[in-house]
Image 1 (tube, rainbow, N blue to C red):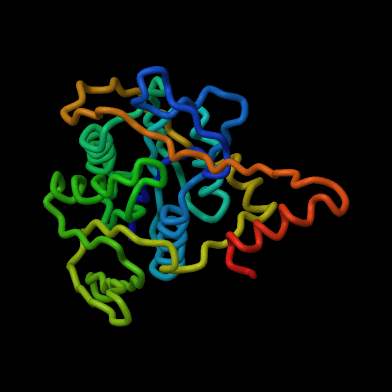
Image 2: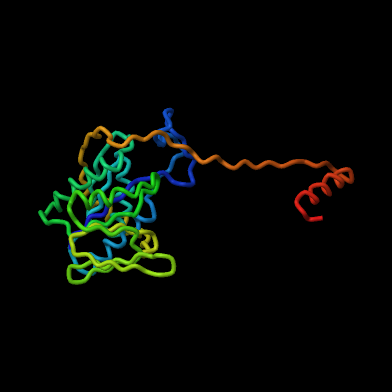
Length: 256
C-alpha cells in the first residue's frame, strides 16, 4: 500500500503572533516565532506508518512551504514515514485552492518507483487557518471518495472503514480505495521520534520541488488577532487603613 500524507508547518500556538502590515498574513519572520505540526497531521502520519507496517508498501509526506519546512518534514520521517516532498514557496500563504492543486499534482505523479498512491491521509483542518478545504479539494480533483473528521480508520480488502464521532454515537462510512481521508487528533496516539529514528531521518530522501504561487481565486480581506487578556493589581492600602477598602471589595463580589 502506497500512502501520501499531507502536512503543513504552522506557528506554535504558544508563541506571540504578529500580523503583516496589511493584516492579511501571519508575520513569521520574528525571532520569537516557533513552528510545529498540528496534532491532526501528526495523527495522519501515524496512521500511514501503521498501515504500511501492516500491509507493506511506502509512505510519503507532502508539504507546501518555505525551505525551513524541511525540519517539520524530517520530524515525520523520524517516526517512520519513508520520504518527503517539499513544494518550496517564497513564504507567502497559499490559499486552499492553490495548495490543493499543487498537492494533487504531486499525488498524481505517484512514488519515485512509479507506483500509484492508493490512499491520501490529511489532517481535518490546517492548524493555523482552519480552512477544512484542502482534503475535499484534493479528492474532487482526483475524482476519489473522501471522508472527513475521521476518528477511527481501518483498511480491509481494498475498502477503508472510517468512523466519525457524532455526539455520543459513531457514524461509519466504508469507501473503496483509492480515497482521501482526513483525520482528527485522537484517531491514534502518535509515536514520539526516537534518537535512532531521528538519525535515520537525516538520510531519508526529501525531494524539493519549485512552484510559483498562482493568482489567488479566493480573496482574504484581513486577519484579526484575539485581544490578549491584561492583568493588573490594585493596592488598597497598607495596615489598618486598608480594611474599609477591602470590605467594599468583598461586598462587590458578594462575599459579605
